[in-house]
Picture 1: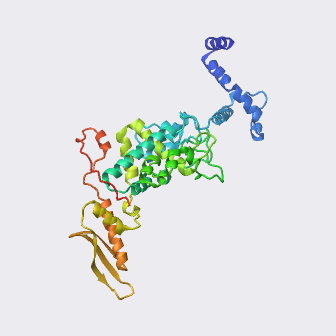
Picture 2: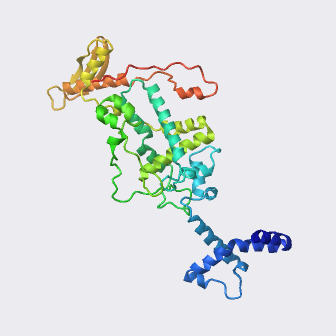
Picture 3: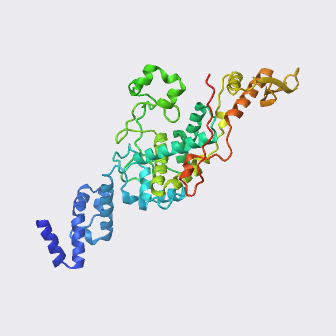
Length: 403
């Protein structure tokens, strides 16, 4: 009550100039006391002499404001929201990635705050990263399945990891010029990626109680089957480890924090600019990266797999024939062998021996079958565009040959 009466008195009796000085004095009085009690010897020497009020010295006033602002920012686990508009690093990152103008700098600054730096869900990137992770998985999966419908499951998992795996996302964050903060805090520039690092000597690859996480899969011993990878593994075909502890106090690796940041950027674009902008960002930054899928295959017995494939598709049994050879009795012979199914040549390979050339020809035939890609393939997300043509079902293959 006395404070309210004092405010009314100051607003009615004092002049505008005196009222401004009075309000400033009330705001900085506590800072003044803290400054005088915690001043270093250098600051004490520069303090005003007796009889001179610090509020009459503009330099001292600005120094008090800086001290007060620094002390208030130290109370926050992450930079305040209003600091995003004053960060040159953040504005440069926004322009470098050519992000939509509807994506504010405040949201971009939030994508750089990991959950281990700030446990408050309103200021970290955990929710944005969850949305971005689902979008990246969806767009990558539909691209692979619609453009390469015959790929084996293991190759799809490898391609998924190559496009949207944590190592790829961490490399992208580094290519974008994102720098890592040594420690998170309210005084850090919002343009730095902030996260709590793991303690030295921590085993980050240790599984935490897989038996309790998935007891049914462990009891049935389905870890060796292809079906178990679909139902019980992550989107990359890897074993799902135990629950990961997140929040302030725990730590993550720089790779995981960078990957979470890239996913959060994807989710932020989707929320602020919509689906077309998010898909355009995915095509520009993810699908534009060259991936040679033919190098992801690893057949142990290609001749046997090719024979099983021809039997399933009702083709004539594959037969290996010599197409050409040179230097059979020299130190470096070269044999060119073709795999034929009736009158059709399925593949061709060259090697220093007939067996090596036959294996390479069978491998080329298998890759020619599994790398089939239909012309003008459409993905399901293309129906979200305005004025999209009627949907036509995509080609669905029988699947890989299980041996």
